[in-house]
Image 1 (cartoon, helix red, strand yellow):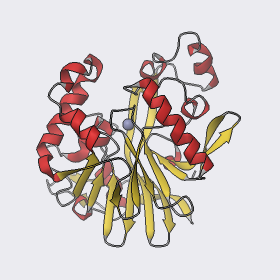
Image 2: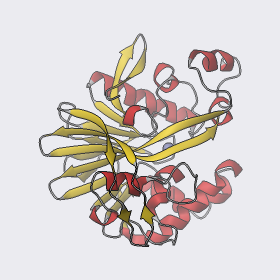
Image 3: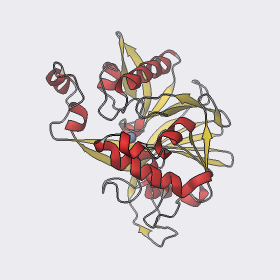
Image 4: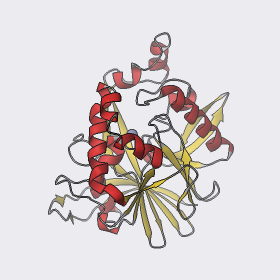
Length: 306
Ligand SMILES: [Zn+2]
C-alpha cells in the first residue's frame, strides 16, 4: 500500500465567486490501495494560545507535562488535515476546514484541493466528524453560499441535534458561544441537505461511523475499509501527537465533556493499536497519517510520512 508525501503545485484556480487562488506549493500525503485513493489535504494551520491547552491540565502535573511534551509557552500552531477519499465516481471529504474569516492561517482548503486536481464542484460527499469551526465553517463561502453545492452532506444525528438546539448558544458557556452561533447559522443554511446518521451506520460503501463522543456531544470517527487496506479518520478524538497518546486520561483543552472524551480516546487508541489500523488525525503532524502503537500501558503516535 504505497504512501507518499509530496509538494504539489496548484494551477491557478478560479472559484465560482471569481476569486483567484495563487499558485503555491501544497504538502499532500497520498495513500493508495486498489481503487481507493486517500489524500490528506491541508486547510492551513490553527494558532491557539498555549493556555487553551495548558489551562485544562491538572495543577499538580502542569509543569511536568509542559516540560515532558515540550508544549510551547505562548502559542501552539497545529495542522489541519482534511481527508479526501476517491474511489470510483465518489469524491468524498471528511470535514471542510474553517472557511473564510475564522483565522488568517486557515481556510485554505480550495487551494489544497486544486493542487490535487479537484474543484469544490467535483465533491460528491461531505461527511463531518463534528461541528466545530475548523471542521464545519468551510461549508459556506464569504458570500454565505454553499461551497460544495452538489455534494451529499452527512453528520451524526446527535451532533446535529446539539448544534441546532436553540438552547445551545445559551448553555454552552461563554468561551464556545461563537462556535454555537456559527454552527447553527451554517446548519440552517444547508437545512435538509444535511443527512443524519447513527453510530455504526455505513455512511459510504465500506465506510463506517464510529461513535467517539466527548470532544463534542456527537463526535464521530470513520473506519474506511479494513485495517489491512484502509484507514481510520479520527477527527479530534485524539487531539495531539504527544500527551493525547502518552496520557490519554489527561483532559484536552478543546474537549467539551472531558471525562467522556477521555473514555472515547482510550477506547479508540486501543482499537487502533490492537487492530493495527492506519490512522489520519485532523491535528496531527506530517499530514496526520500514522499508526498508534502501545508503549507500556499507554500509546505513541508513529507518523508514516515525513
Ligand atoms: Zn479541530
